[in-house]
Image (cartoon, rainbow, N blue to C red; front, side, top):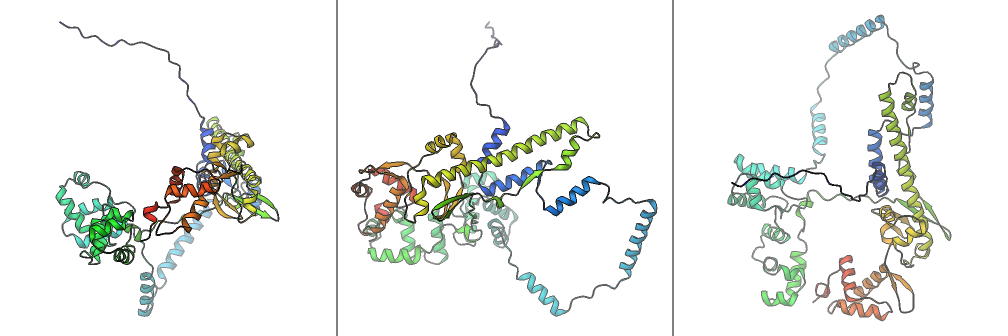
Length: 480
């Protein structure tokens, strides 16, 4: 008989190296990389969670608070039993007077119409989900169909597309695939046109069907030559559809370009987030001045009432320990905000010196600059520089610019001059704007023309910059 061996237990020593980061350090790094709007939210949250922190008040409020601290009972009410009976009598008298008062006169017919008009004139802002659900109540009679429709509507993204596979929806809703497909076809007839499509191609086709153009050349272009349309391959489309290029271009401009690529955003457009400068570089004559928008960060201070409680005799040790922890947290939070502002100010000051000609001259070019160079100059870690400039903007004489955009790679021209990668991109845009649109320049030709200006630039670099600038290749830029 085979005997089963039991696993043996034992102890082993293992030495590992880990980076342990204190919570305070994690908070400091987080505050450092927060842009101004998110920093405001972080401050508001910290004030809510820490009673030792409060917003600085006006001078009059400070004086009133100081008076309350000197005489805390000055503003308190001392009520006796007679006072309470007087208050009860006053309340009963008020209720009697209110019950005996005349009922309000009903509004006249004209006033009622005016009120109804004002209430109805306020537009109701519906979300995409709410709008489609309301339309679904008119489109479906059976409760099970309406429930399945709501599952599909809930699976749409903000653009109005359905990216979830229908088979997965069928399993989730305990239904069948043919049933889900039938419900989806009905949903695709709702507004806005093109809603609940599974791809951009299907969204465009649904919009053309709604316009009654399913027998048109525009419908054939999207259904049969969609890939060629995306890559502007007009000759291939001409051969497949057997029409002239001029007719293709006319149909594309008149019938296809007006179509909506993101139908869901028609009801709920994406909000435009305001851009706020985290640091300001202001020109004063021939010099540059560095400023921080201090008014955007609410001033904070320690709550003196809670500070006084820490030394009060009536406070137990557990309460004092709690207040000491909150005091340490408040001090550290104030320090991290100060450190963030100091780091941003130092980086902006270095940029004003390094990129002086760019800020003062409207046609000035950016000098090549890396984060490593700034870190070494300011005696900071390179990761600190990366966190400090992430998602932040600088207001300067050239406009509101991303702070990260001032850090570029270096290229050395044939004359020995150092140029930044942004300068190469500007030259690339200038060449593309001046090219013959019927015979656009290839990446190799663009690379050769930039090399002719004394700047070494490989073809793959041109392709990378095109993708960064969202510029198509030669095929896509060609106009027939």
